[in-house]
Length: 235
Image (cartoon, rainbow, N blue to C red):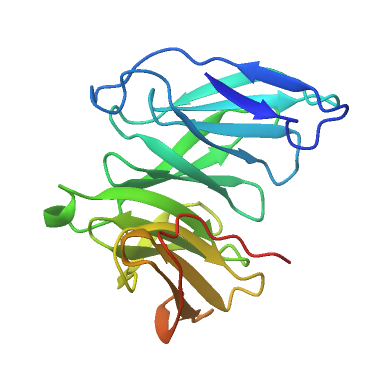
């Protein structure tokens, strides 16, 4: 079961809960539903839930009072383990980082029905590194041209370019995360810098981002903090 408290700015502090059912193929991680993250669409009014436990993206209409009406379930590959969702700023495409099979997926969004259709799927690490790797966070550049995904185990940030017409992905580079276990990423509003929360090295590494190529360059600057797990930029 997952709960959305005061669902995305609902009124009167009302609480709503919805339940998912099912299991996945990985008996150690998918023995029951595991709603890992929620993202609201760019246009607003639709919430997309990544359920790692059942390999599904579940879409809900958000009512004026914050109530949730289920719209659609979109299946991903068995054992994928969808963890985090990111939206293209244009609103047409949705991207998902799959923790268990180390892939990133692009999907087309039908806003009216909440249905998501897979466009493309790419591995986030080289084939020899897939065993022992677990994907974590995903970010889209402010201009919508590049995707960044973190890999725990391979200890890298996968950089992909995004075709603006089709939503397909092309690998740019596997960049070092500057530490170990990059659990979370954050892009500055300008898109000029990316922060990587490297959980097992007690460090948030800071990278400069090339807006033309999407590539990252380690600035040599970092923030020392114990077991960083999440980074948020306050505008």
